[in-house]
Length: 148
Image 1 (cartoon, rainbow, N blue to C red):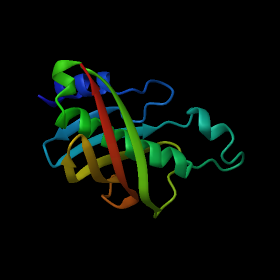
Image 2 (image 1 turned 180 degrees about the vertical axis):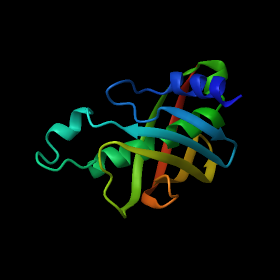
Image 3 (image 1 turned 45 degrees about the horizontal axis):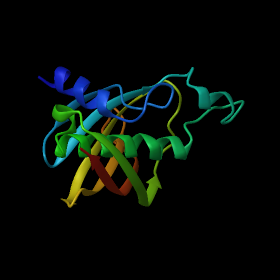
């Protein structure tokens, strides 16, 4: 079930390689969405951050979490079924990074609904590792503008 739904939501995202940081969506409902991503060692940003010991930049982690928030908004607004055009504006309200994310790390990203009304989505997003440890978390306010 989630395989087809995952493809539909991912196809609606306004991101693509090399700037798409969700490989698949494994769970979604009105309150939460969960996805996965594998930070491959050949990703473009590792070449210069840092040159002798690469780590995932905090800005990429923030982008990863923001993308799962946008995916949740796509689901909540049924954009994945209507294919309506939209723009989204995001504000990161707060962000905390608890652990370094190294290349070759498989992460689980989730967005948890705080509120959704008038096309505004406020959500708390997390990046977790396979041991369910929170590596980073952020709170976002996303404004969706839908075009008919």
